[in-house]
Image 1 (cartoon, helix red, strand yellow):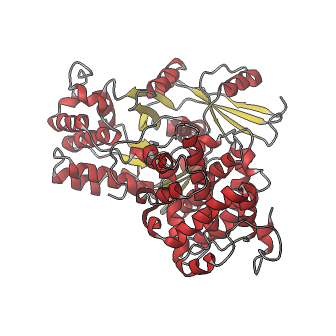
Image 2: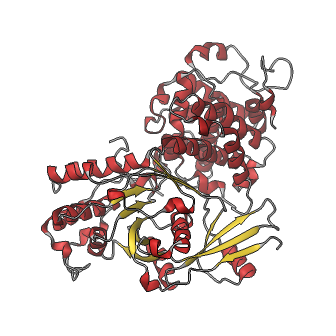
Length: 567
């Protein structure tokens, strides 16, 4: 295989000199490729300044044991493998060996040990990559028992462990139950709190984490008014914007790494070279690593950066996966280089998503000035064949991604009477994706799977109608007020029927050139839309738009109960 191979060896140091300053929930591929990479870079640059800011991971789910066992067998070190190229036979590879993850605890094995670690004065930051759903899981019986024990001081005893010494229900403690128990212990002991830092792909993720901690405390009888006030006034919850495409590691990735470098590793983390981290500089007593020395941006307000990234990258990522799947493709790089899909994505990004950013008066001029460059950067990153990110993986949890990342853009565009045709096609493609999966008897990988599959289970035998689509668009948990917006519903229905009747490529072509029908999806244009062609079309003078701008021609099971992120 052609392409260059470079390697950064592990930091030569006494591992015993490293100590934990950060505890992280959710040690998966992304955390290992992103936050660990920055901290490892800092350790290389200034060992003495970084040595007390290493990580201990915490897993709360049974399958986290696999990651813990792998890391333990690797002496708590692992390779980050960054690959890049547009030719599968000529990919450049850089390997960085990371040593900043010191240990990993499993809360279901010993929740008392996890609470003691979190409550220790040396723990300054608790960071999270727990996905959108992790913030919506309610406290359970085990959480309440842990809070009671923390208030009593029972968990301070280093001899206390599971399962003999405390109630077995504590083994099922959730992320925020463990965090609350530790903060309650710190408050009782007169210690300063730690910073809670979300690193999940959520808009204003710091505010989401803060609301979850405080609402959980207020709902817990074990948390008194003094503790609740302390959680609100003294704990810091900085928002972050994180970015590095990190697909799941495949057996072939493991084999390729061994063949090209001689490294025999059971679970290397594979990613792209690009990484980006913007952090709100708001930490308890200002205590944090100097991540800005290794490329992170520390800023007073993350929102403009996260809005630009979440909308142009994450929303586009979701749009890719559904149209790409309908086109019979497997990987993101195949979809973004498809002759029809790429120009469709560019139009969606520039005419609808970027337009929403330009219309936002809070967006700084320096970011608006580089929107076109950022669009090009995102598309070029998606073309990286080395990432080998699958469309099926990106399609996971589509309901939550749309609700959190995409819905607001549509609502803003409709409020300004702007076009949302690209978004209508995105949702129509998602509907076709769900319908085809249900009819094939395949499992939908969405925490709200029951919700999104029910319309299509009902509509299994209806091969040409829209009853399933109508029921899908009725789901207010996903679509919010859009479920009652007739203009929006009509726009999605037209794209859905176009895909059925004219095929995906013809529908994409219409969206690229803005021809075939009016899908502005505003109520004022609804009547005009009904008077026009159904959306199936031939390229003649009958369907050419009045004006065409030159640049447009660039060709598991559903969780039972969740708490609201808005709570």
